[in-house]
Amino acid sequence: MRYLSLAQQKVLLTLALFIPVILYFRFYYYPLSPPLEETYKEIVVEVWGEVRNPGIYLFKNPPFLRETIEKAGGLKETTIFDMDSSSEILETGTLVTIAKESPNEIKVKLGRMEARKLLVFSIPLDLNRATVEDLCLIPGIGESLASEIVTYRERRRGFRSVDELKNVKGIGEKKLQSFKSYLIVRP
Image (cartoon, rainbow, N blue to C red; front, side):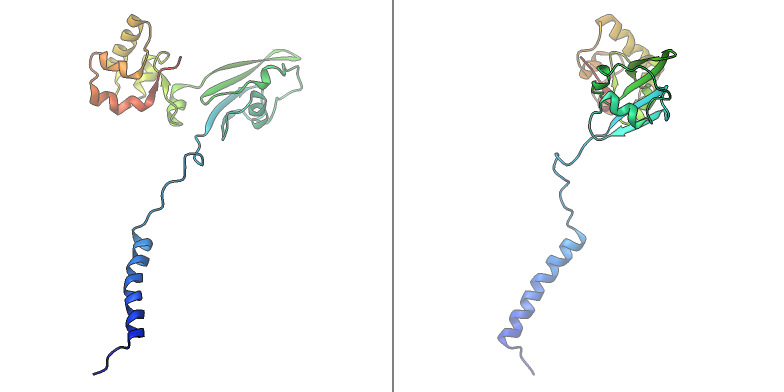
């Protein structure tokens, strides 16, 4: 019968300890998510009207109005454009409508994208501006509940927080938690 030398025993012990570590990292270890600085939320802006390529555009940082128009292919025609307003910074969910005022002048109107588009991009609806139809787009809110919410809002002259929905007839804590992420109260 043959025995292993002390050096061979050390090599086997090292391998016996090393193999489970390798298997752990191969099959069970998941690295932590990237730090918050590295993650970002896309800024969504919709552009319509007198631009070459109307549509919805995504930005890594809040864009200037001028930058948004450029991303939409620029204006269709050479016209007078107020450069002061083009330096305005846009927030996510903004609708930019560019209309021709006269043959040489355009007007830029800033508004809010439609509720269905906002929800597609996970942008919460403003509880103080959403219509009954808008609220019905949210899972868990039907027409009667949406009507209750709007009635409550009109009686109280607006919501101060989303949690105030618990005071609306038909909404408990569990139901509120199911659709709370779809709503926001803007100042």
